[in-house]
Length: 320
Ligand SMILES: *Cc1c(COP(=O)(O)O)cnc(C)c1O
Image (tube, rainbow, N blue to C red; front, side, top):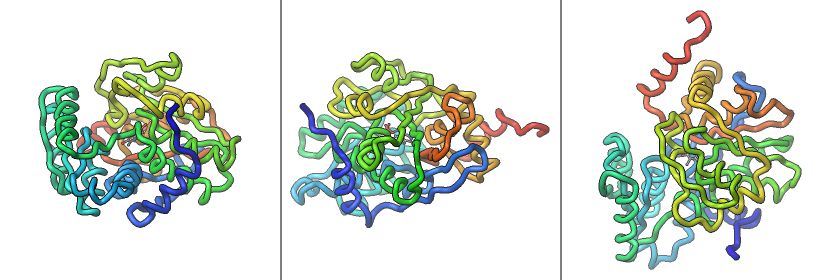
């Protein structure tokens, strides 16, 4: 049996990563009856810095000297590149050629090597595997106890800064964020409810939780690009943790995600990417009814001005 991270692991993660991550604010929303935990204001624009920092700070000197490798098209790649730069570790991020040039450039600008491997994620995975065979440490985006514990520090901060919290609404893809948060908050108070939210286009964890086994999805284009993709061929932690700890999982549509991004921008003055807006979308759509002590994790803000403008144009204000 795999040992899954618990509240103590999250506390250890916090003392390890404290000096590298921002303690992001929790603010009352005007768009929805909830408070928002603003990880869109985290360094690199998403919570993924937390898990990457915890994983890489736990590496031995010898491992650090051999460098790290990650597969990602977005926020995890930026986080690994950023932490590697701060620690003086050599990092390579493997991408498929479908990844936009701007994202590859952003990862390279943080100092990581970028390998564009081929037309699909499979080629990027294969490139990463050959770099692991050469001695680099693979930094998984979600299915790693240290990564999960790092993401769980979001939950610790919520319980400390907003002790009246009764319910957390959390974006869910591979499930590292929601399972780490659930381990932390339920370790503090088992009655706090944790709800996972995914896009309805290819929701791998949602379907896998229902089936009780890994379910493959066809990757589809979605506004929540930070949530797209499958769980991979094996899963040791996040599926079991989500099944055990997440009270409920819900889906939101493209239209609901766009409406939430627009409302967060117009009403709360926030730039939030699609993946970061799904929790607010779940409240606005009624997929999750309002309730006292609700905190929504706004997980990331990495959306281009052009993409956000397109969303705002598609979701005009009444009378606009
Ligand atoms: C990666 C990511 C998620 C999902 O996190 P998982 O740990 O894969 O469930 C949610 N929001 C943003 C902005 C992300 O980058």
